[in-house]
Image (cartoon, rainbow, N blue to C red; front, side, top):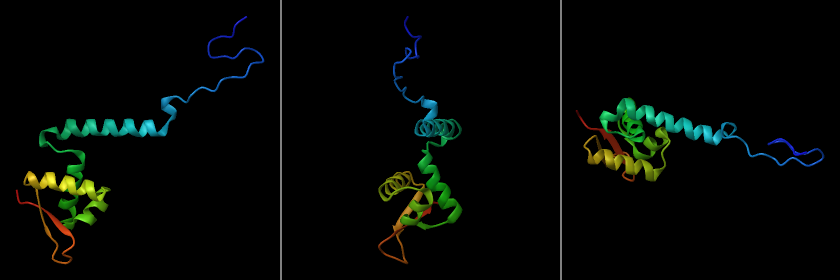
Length: 114
């Protein structure tokens, strides 16, 4: 007599089954991120912004001028990523970047008018 699929024969050791995807938090978080980006693009696609660009613009709108380090901290972006995002927004004329008057080692980022 053979065992039913997924069942071990009497006396045989069961082979562990890999976890289902729905039981893996990392997979579920990735799916949530995909869904969130999809919704963002549906709602904001006409603005031609990425979620990261939107986060940077929103932080500047809320807090005014910010140095690039503080902006990165507020938006949970590392130095390289915040610099890239700001460069793209600056190229589109949405933000301006200049050396901070308070600390010449930092860049101050502001929204542009209009």
